Amino acid sequence: MAEATTAAPAADAVLGAGDAVTIWERGVPARVRWAGRAVMIGALAACVAIFHDDLPDLGAVWRVLIHAGPGWLACAVVAQLASMAMFARVQRRLLRAGGVRMSLPRAIRMTYAGNALSTTLPAGPAISVAFNFRQYRRAGAPARLATAVVLLGGAIMTGGYTVVALAALVAEPRSRAFAVAALILLAAFAGLLVLAGRRRGSGPAALVRRVLHPVMGHRLAAPFTGPLCEGRAGLRLRPADWAMLTGASLLNWVFDILSLAAAGRAVGLHAALYAITLAYFAAQAAGSLVPLLPGGLGAIEGSLAASLVAFGALAAPAGAAVALYRLVSFWGVMGAGWLAWLAVRAGERPAETLS
Image 1: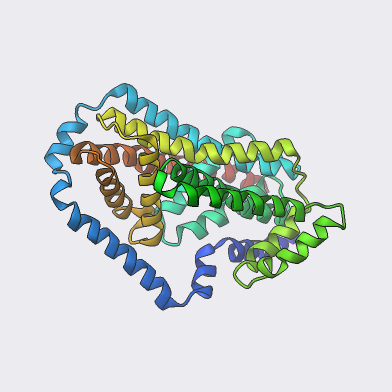
Image 2 (image 1 turned 135 degrees about the vertical axis):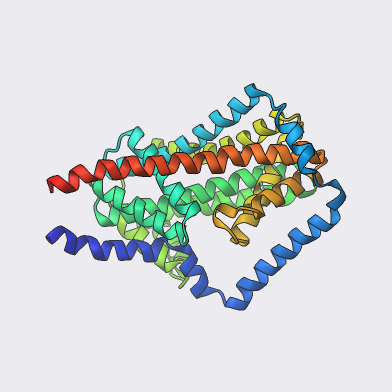
């Protein structure tokens, strides 16, 4: 009974901190949000209109699909498995830095299950956050540590996403100057955050904290930074931990992009890797800004195929590559995720019976 009394407020706290959709809706006027979505829908419609004659015929896509190379298709599956494993390792390492041990198979099951909840249910991201929080608590993490793992893990993955996207822009000559400047600014900001997070030292660290206070204390950032700062006291992250977390977050996105590239090679699509990467991030943005269906269905497929065609790919291989990639990265991962969720629930029932 005492544990239930302390756990309920903690769950409310992590939902309030982790539900970025709620923070977004509170901080940005509705007309601005709808205007942004209208612009993205208009951009997608413009792409369809411009490349209408180049969009693939379903019959042509099917003919390409049935001749897909099994070796490259296997590579796409392996890359997707590696991507999910990297995400699980980030969570596992953060828990270990807080003194909580979780086996890798358990972390992988939790990762797949949380992904399935996030991509298929209404308000899925918030439900996924609550699910992960509960699993951290069951593993022995205090409420503050579990909240810090949720928030810091999200920040690390977002940082990796940004770095990979900017690195792809560096390969494009027209955007190289902007991308290099953005990477330098990002590295400087990350250095300031590391310095501000030092537990000792009242000189430079205190100065950086005073400089960053207006940003960290802003009404949009405070729901995240407050619980994160409270929970970070329980984390003991060494340089080796930061190196592993950075590498795993980067590899999570890199392996996902390589899965797309392998799906393309399986159907004869030979595009430059930077072009595939830029098309990938354009599709991710479309899926985030136009959340018409769970998992970005429709928006991701349409924008990814249109982007590949814009970079010079033929229509039928582009459509087939997108179909194979989404079969592996969305439908396959989602199916595995619900099986993992059933396994997690089956493991919880004996513990609940014993308690």
